Length: 248
Image 1 (cartoon, one colour):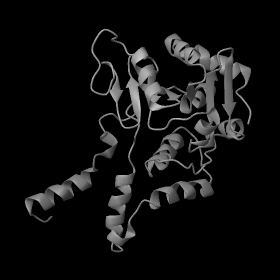
Image 2 (cartoon, one colour; image 1 turned 180 degrees about the vertical axis):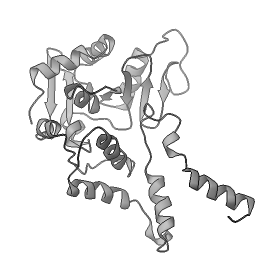
Image 3 (cartoon, helix red, strand yellow; image 1 turned 45 degrees about the vertical axis):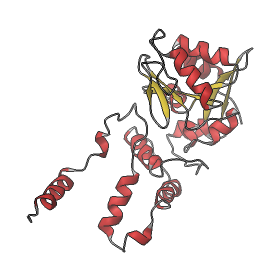
């Protein structure tokens, strides 16, 4: 594996809030910037959020509290200061631009473990500070696939929402990326594995509902009100009809 090119590393550091960089330096390898923000920075795309990965959940809580906007108030029952939005996956700090997220659902002892967990090669990049200098690592296909705007699915071994990768395919497709059929098939296979076909009874409509339920956005910064998960107008009308006991 290689590292980021010098110019790309410097460009990322210039676009990262100074307080976040200080935390990464002070943690000396226990905190990494990784994933989509690095890809977006190099591709000159808008950075939606900066994902930070810690070596354990306690470290993630500590970093989130250090970066929290209000340091003078009491912590909640989870040990978090006010101004931190907590979900099952991350602690989100909206007082930064871009928004900062401390990922606590997945923690890693090494950068290699971190980038191996990402579902697409264009996200396989991480940056940290070892106490002496800035360090980085990228996957073998990172630069080539990013330059080609090509989505290569990695089939990562991790506990994840089975439909999450397919939602990211849609997001990237809208940005002009393309996905080879074998990678698209592998992402579909990950989601289909979560289906209990014994409860479907060979019904296409039931299968569609199950698959729709697996397509859930897990990033609270992208869809905090879960608007994308609301049923379509036709589904709402169908549900209202059933509720009222009427037929159309």
